[in-house]
Length: 282
Image (cartoon, rainbow, N blue to C red):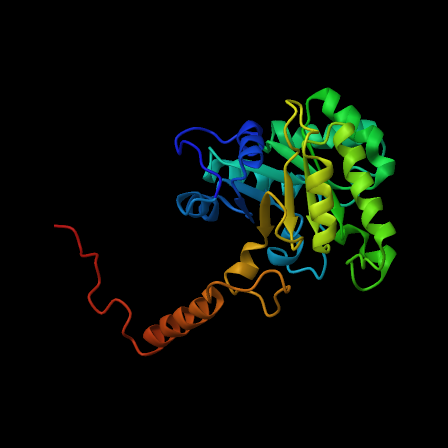
């Protein structure tokens, strides 16, 4: 796991150092201050305020129905809960496909109002000029490649990109290289074969600003990645279905259910607060 002084704020420099030194680092999604504080205590130094909040917080069936104002608020909450963490904020659907000027204003809100360290966007090569402009303006960009959930309506029911030949692998590697050349500070690969992540890591081994690697984070992308991120709710066993790259390590959902059932029983049977803690004053 990537290591740093627990009292010092984690920065992009730390992530680059971890990648250069071969220290694998863990990232989890997070959407609130309380959870962020517990994740930090557990050693999680990087947190993603994902547009997955549309599903796991708001109950939608995709990541699309969430906007900038709410995601900025959730990002600020995570920042307050884990002041020293590196916080990555998702740019939601429609916030960066609407012209470079508007996209830059939205990205700046995540940094200034939300306290994000970096912003993530689902990209292809056509977004290279926007990445370059944001980087020049001082907004660190994470390029999300591979499977892109925000493109659900373009691909049908599934957002996963299926790789069938080496040409597709090479195309993703070339896109990652172009994003890095345009100023992207990290690459996030979602649901890709290991050949893709291994190729991207190798291609960007010396593309960092100091001649080191550009950090590559995998979300179901194979062992070559420098860091790995999954949805917290999947890890905690709070979803009815988990992606194959995120097997649950706990059954928190079941614990919540059992605790709620016990609370309901105590209230129904009159066992709750049989000895009341408040008395009349004298």
